[in-house]
Length: 263
Ligand SMILES: [Cu+2]
Image (cartoon, rainbow, N blue to C red; front, side, top):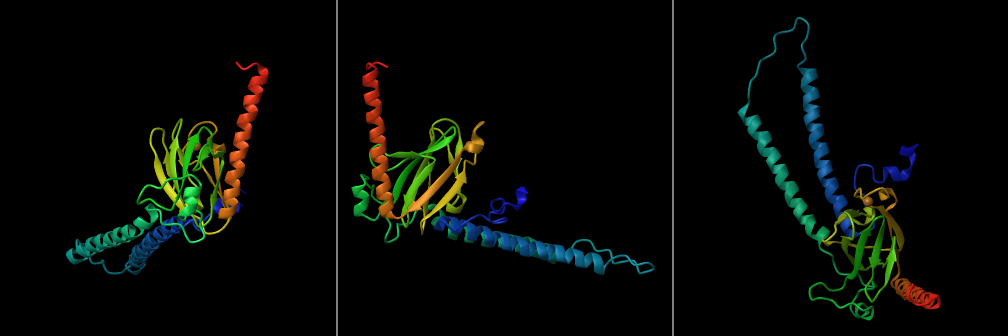
């Protein structure tokens, strides 16, 4: 019954993709290597089975030729395997740049120049036009700090579509791992160290994932969610979140004063 759940299959034999260009590139790279592997497997196993059948011992048949070593053949498959390795290495490096380096946001995304400044974010040169979110893993939840003063959320990260979002990932207790399969590779969240990853989501949607590093008794509950919305909805979310946090702080201050100030 567990195997019948569609989610259990995800993309069965290949990485999930479709939420972000880097996830698509990882998926393509994986498939290229997988298909080369399948082709070689079929050739090797095919030749083996063919030889077993063709040259099997027959009752009363002649003694088969006893062959030891074949220099051209041995050189051939050594050089052949080397060449395949070189090709896979070159193809990997062709993809690697696009997987690692965050691209610019698309037209219609949030972080395109002026808007970035308006949400209180200063851009270091050479690192322009991405929305930076600080991700913090904690037993057993994820906290997201958005650009601007004291705007954060837990569990669900809300981001604008068509916008390159770079994540600075760390942890405040033990090692966790950030992973939303459809949005790209996983990144470890390690105390005292910051890892970076990115995604750019083309259309509104909900993407879910799960902490991918056994981090304690509540690890199974340490899920994560990314909600992609239009830039306008994102701005509204930020404004609402800001107001909610401020109201909670004011309420707390009032409560403290009513109880006598020192509690
Ligand atoms: Cu965990």
